[in-house]
Image (tube, rainbow, N blue to C red; front, side, top):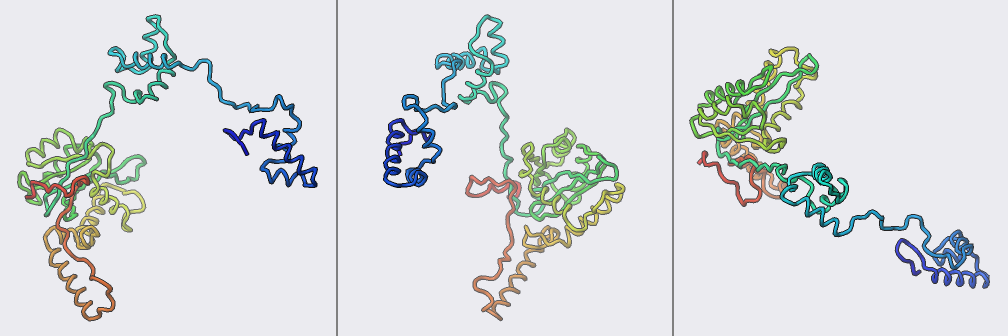
Length: 360
């Protein structure tokens, strides 16, 4: 009914509405029904009748107005010009405004500088304070055991509040086998170096055939650890800071470890108790646990190449069952094909993962 912005009805339309309602009431209509029909309340009608026509209009208290201290376009451009000058381009407004004041110059307040720079996307990380950009780790694809390992450290609770034992654990991404582990009271790169040496010796790793991926902690990137990897001919790979998705196989392993029913409900009473429990877990995980990520064979079976025969036998069992009773299958039997490649941090932008040159 001629409403303007914010629901405001002009004076002319108000007068027209009043005349229509008065005409309807004189003809015998009820005032409330006439107001409902035209879309206003009886209270609004009373308010309009009580006002002097000359004073009727938009009398809302919250009308928009331009503040007297609003910066002009010229002043805003001056702020941008000064902030981007050679002298001040690397400095925040908290440094610029006082420096100008020392020279007897005032353009605007510090908050105005911040506001104008923010509106022009020039406030965040000015100059040399730009945020560091971390590239995604290089993608590696394992086509067999002992080509790509990942490792990490997790906490095991102790009976002393705030104190922990540290579980170091290395896993092969192709077979998911735990190829090395130790529990210590501290974490440092010397202990990490000893563990990787033992694992390489146990798995008979030769130079330049293994990639070892880890997080960015000091036990992973310490000088002793990096020197050891260089001597062993192991290629180091690291996750981005605070990005757990870059090390998914170790994260998944630790979740399995801490969520199985056998995981202690209370703290470990001693480091010997923790080592004994982890020893039992590793034995079960490697030899008994049927891993969902490798078609439900055990990590040890896949690590030794026995998974091919196991999966072929399962496929034959299913096909024979279908022959005996084909009505139970509406399509193909379950897929028991071997998983031939496992990738670490695959590049989704590429059509295919780059196969690790070391595995070629």
